[in-house]
Amino acid sequence: MHSPEKIIQDLFQQTPDSGLIVLSLDGRIEHWIGACRLIFGYTADEAIGRLGDILFTEDDRRRGIPALEFDEAIRAPRAEDDRWHVRKDGTRVWISGSAFALRDETKAPYAIAKLVRDHTDRRSYVETLEHRLGEQHKASAFKEVTVAALAHELRNPLAPLANAVRLIRMAAPKTPQLNAPLAIIERQMAALQRLVDDLLDAGRVATGKMNIQFKPEVDLNGLLRLLADGMRHEFAHKKINLEIVLPPSLITLEADPDRLAQAVTNLLTNALRYTNGGGTVWLKSTVEENLVVIRVQDTGVGLSAEVMPYVFKLFTRGPEAEKLEPHGMGVGLSVVKEIVSLHHGTLDVRSEGVGKGTEFSIRLPFKQGQAWIANE
Image (cartoon, rainbow, N blue to C red; front, side):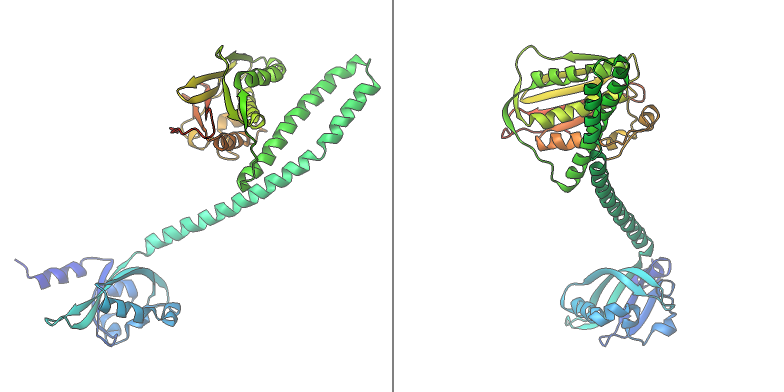
């Protein structure tokens, strides 16, 4: 059987990233064991007899960290930290260290032992992730500013264009050949107006400035019928069936009718964009216990399992959506998510896969003060 001393010696000799440093009470290195040479670059002859301060960075020496660690090791059970240290060649190494006092039979300290382990690879990985996260935050902030600026720039020409269309209709009321091109302009302007509104709201979402005005008795089915009727021409133009499935009884809830209409319109527009001609879109409502449920279901391009977790993030679009609607921006669903959240509700999406359609479900409480548990 090997002695404890032999086991400890073999342990440190055979562990490539761990070492043991023993310092005298005046802070000088007395023992240099295990992987210390590999970690710090000093041989035992070069390290023994020198102050342990040489292993600390200049900033830490200036802050008094070596003395603090020494004092903590004596006065407390141990001193533990993770910090940059300096190798012989001046390069840095990230060390996880644990220092503690060695005591004699009277409990008096006679030396400080410091276990060190090289975790430079982990720290470098963490710093890389932190850097990437910082760059993403910068990119996100720039994106939000750009979205708001773009929305305002796009909104400016819309009013003059609308006025120009009205003037043309007034100047040539009996010119039937103008009806078709003017109708196209009006449809495209309406689509552009919705896009601008979504971009403006995306900017408000990013800054937490989206407004909400609740009304106590909103007729849900009446609101949904009105929205569907307003979009029937667009569905018919693309040869997509729009089916409404609503319960016969009245459903009222406390909500912001304008924002709720915006959310449902965005879902219907989304279904319209990503459903091929000949397909079907359903607009449904029902009640589940103490929740009002609105569903928009389609036979469109569907969602892959990879895209599903990110579908409500700003500017997220699946490859199938890119193919069918290359000019979309992936803004509307993030706005819908925020509107539903402001109503203390949840927004869920289901799809059995690419080409198998999509179903979005909005669940809202009847009353804003009503307690309920949402399962997202």
